Image 1 (cartoon, rainbow, N blue to C red):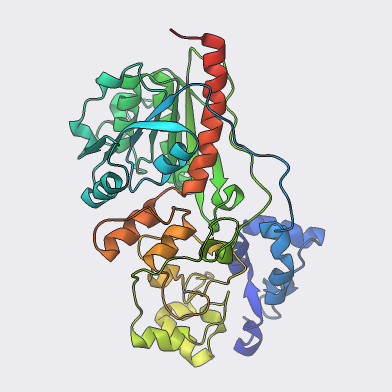
Image 2 (tube, rainbow, N blue to C red):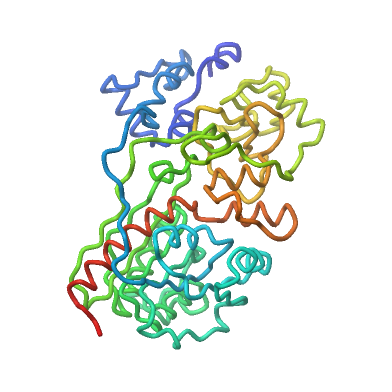
Length: 419
């Protein structure tokens, strides 16, 4: 590689790919087309980029905050629409759907602290605490418009050429499909991590589509929604799986992305997203040894911005391994969206250090980055609160998906006029 003094001013192709969320093949093509030219490392001839290129490039990658939207995904419900939510967590998706005008009739969640959170904030919600396997949902048959669920991603056992519902038994997606079959809603929405696209070489996702087809639902082409395009100041992605009951001849349309991108300042300071600065709250702390290292990292910097000897000491054996490892010793900048939050705020591989103070984000800062309202309180220990927030669907993303569901249901009921 380039000598270490020079490398402080450059980043590798892998690091560039991770920083801007584009594939390495896309960056190679942009280099060939002159859109984002790379330099060449003299010994290996690998592509490397000057860091300053990405400062200039940020408007293209993230969009410009000067863009004023001339559209809104908002649509008012023409009837009272209801949702049954599975794997509800701390309520990120449920609040988002509520903001879109959808009434939550019941939520199932196994984590007792998340259930305490739901009950504390919405005493009127019917929170069904416990393992989904122990619940029967037939009482909601033909009485609920939407079933949603952020089911975990699990591999299936394959029996024969076509995966059916029976083959998924024992997985949580089986339970999601079972409930959809019992309730028979016009539309069902599953959400998961982007990694589901490639899980088991894509077989897991195809199996899920096959199962929904078997129980009477046509699956809309799957999309991965980037939270930053939906008024969330965080580079988080969620795969959305939409099933439409086969007797319904209507097209579902995903929410349109906004051009304006919000950053960490928008999350934590008074502005368009929130009407006051982030409230004070508890938070995790770094040990003194880590503070001494992270104190040396500038905003938007990471471990490669440390002096060489400290890099080697802090990284250990991984210093000599490949890969960008851009999440290590990472300090977020005020003028960029936050990287995806995890369930723990101080994991070495996914560091999310405050831009000015050398500490992890507090609980309320975490909640702001996920666009939870300030009055939404989290139950359990601080570690449990971080876990609930880190696992959540960003509230504003949930709202935009909610609008798309309302639009679909408005069309459905205006055409079918069910009694």
